[in-house]
Length: 101
Image 1 (cartoon, rainbow, N blue to C red):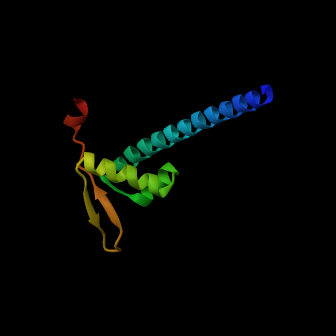
Image 2: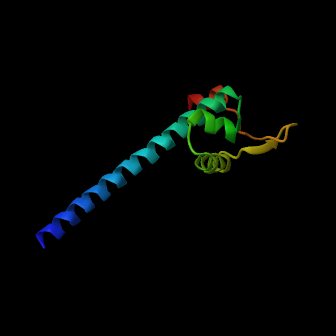
Image 3: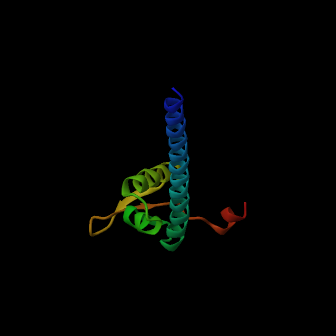
């Protein structure tokens, strides 16, 4: 009985550690996405594509797509397609007076 309790306690401990590690990894990915998003937004003068965000943040494309679509919705970005058929999001430009507020 003691052996079963010990195995259960160890398994529970491992599970908790794995949950914490997973949570920390997700938070790191979100932070990389945020940093890459604003860096690419500035570099692209308000334009950003999914592939640019994926490459800059080095995260899973599906995670980046969800992040980018959420930002596009919240910040009222307009999707645009270039001559090659690539989709970009055009975000409202940040004006100097907006940054001072």
